[in-house]
Length: 290
Length: 314
Image (tube, rainbow over all chains, first blue to last red; front, side, top):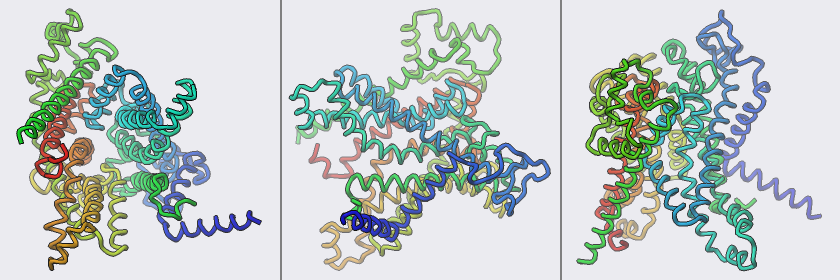
């Protein structure tokens, strides 16, 4: 008996969500489509991103080419669809790397001795006092430009923030009663860290990371646009804008669509991430619990 | 009174010491970068430029490359402190003079962009805070879009529409005011959207405070309450954000100068990265770190002056 009613309640809650927060629902749908395009681009287009038709260069949007074609006669829509993988991977990769490194540093600073704490936190201070993009460019001067290096460069400036956050969380949790109880019960230190401190410090961090994927994605696209990330033949959104630079005056569609793709992706990530954050903080009101 | 002054003095000292530490760290990082780059230090310094063996020998003497690393480090620190940021073999000029030439146009752009962003954010926050649901929804939607669009794409769009399609603005460079309009707008959109978000939230909090109600009860008009009482509270969080904004503006400068083909620090940095001109890259990074630290320290010290409530707290 309880099964149908709870199912009903679930459905009611879901339609209420659609009515009260249409933005969140649309953002979730858009984000799922983009993720799907990144995993199986063939679902959205029959073409291939490097397939060029020399007879159809710089064609305006039409039924056969919904986003037009570029200077080499490649279909812009196909390239935008295939670009989702590049951009999402760049954003996710940079954030995942930053979260991993930042968490490790934060844990060491928060749980290790005073000296480790001092060294790590001063390093964090220095990196955080360098403007983000300039720090990334410094790293790319040393490591050389490229798609993978640009991901490292972005991760380097994101990581210190997480190190700071994890350190504070660790120190708070370490003094909390349940950790003290666990220690008093005789649990080993490593077990306390892994079973109690890491999970509790991690949830707020993960939500923050969701939103950060959007900013990292824009940073990666910006670096590609500046010629320091993914290189032009690749269907990366920033690189497409860099390659189309000379044709914007005659072919507006080469300028508009890759940028729209970036904007929609970031918007969707921000809205979904924001909703997650509010839910976590319990600010979503009583109906947010469902 | 005396002990409070002593407390402020102590705080000032601690703050200054931290800033110096951070800058020392930045110089150390750049020294390490120089030595950790694959290849010799001479290679790292000349980048992709081809130089004669005499020049290489001169570099070795200048940097004391035959001496122990610690001595080299000391000499490097000394040079940076005395304001010598090295020589760019690609540009055939000292890093200081290259930065000096770029700083003017960049400050102009950043100043114009920031001023525009502040004006737009203040107006939008003042007019939309605490209004009907749909107005607030519209404003926060616009802010969300503004903070999500990549800045370089905003620049490209403005260029495509106003320079290429309509022909109202010069497409390349352009001196004076007309050349500054589009770059400033493209910089102001993301920054202004963010500021407007912060200010509107601040205003809405303040407008619910008892003193705002009291002002209304005295018969003050709605606009008067917003301008005379609420605005100054809403501006406070903006000042806290200023340091962060500065970093954002520097990044914005690089892409905006590139999109609009303007001269400045951003393009100087970008060319240096492409040419592996390490002295210029490190020079720009060090100068901006210094300005960043000075700005942040200054703000920290000024904050209690602007907000008297903080004086009691410290």
